[in-house]
Image 1 (cartoon, rainbow, N blue to C red):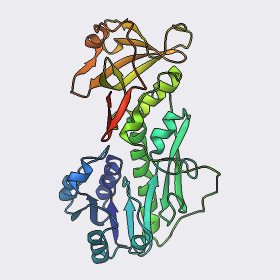
Image 2: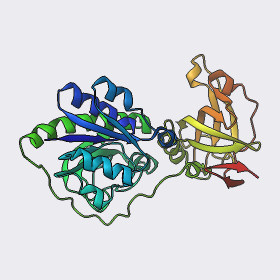
Image 3: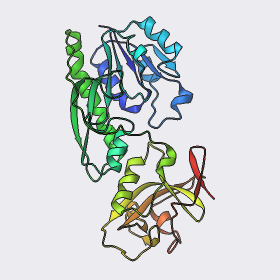
Image 4: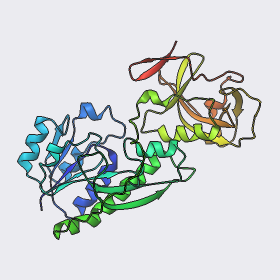
Length: 328
């Protein structure tokens, strides 16, 4: 059986390396052109791994364009693993692989079909997510399921920690399915149907913090959008700041404060515990790491020393410029 690999995201690297180290043969890898991958969150360079194992690596702009079609026709694959690839593979391209293309979706399908499932699961405050290995089909995330793994969401997880678990589950499920494929099996079962809308795509400007919501919602929002994603953001004194990390305080703290108001600094001998308390619509959070759009990074002692007491973070004084926002 002739197998290929399609991916550009870091979540696929662990699985591809494990497949190659186990001695399974991958005929070629198709990845995203560097100038395009550099604009995507979580992109990884597949070329060094391919060079290490002597695998041809093709760089493309779109898996559905003429160049990609020509590559797939030339490769004449039986199976292609599409792991960490954000472009939808169109039906006429799916047909270029004899048995089919296998993808992974970071949710327990059919729940959370669509874009950015890990980020949305955190934003929505869900207590578990998962990973589904599926046969790609004409409709997005609707193909037959090969295998699924449950991933609990703790209160301490971020998008980065959950995607590490997704990457590990990709590896384990793919290593289990390859011997079955080589034996001529095609494991699968049909998805059930749920009356859920597909998750919408998320864009950098969607990271705007609405301070009138509760502290727990803002805490979930920040950890859902932190690195390697563009981050949650807001303004203080007309300056845009990305909030990379925060901590949650009990809802009973500072009930009379205005939403977005800086209550004051938190100081500690432990630098990572230092920050600034900000009131939310209900409850409050501690800002632990901030970065301005001009590159100023504040965390630890530097953040707790800021004279911001009484100032208010803004969530409604912006205009959109390109893929980010600027204050009016």
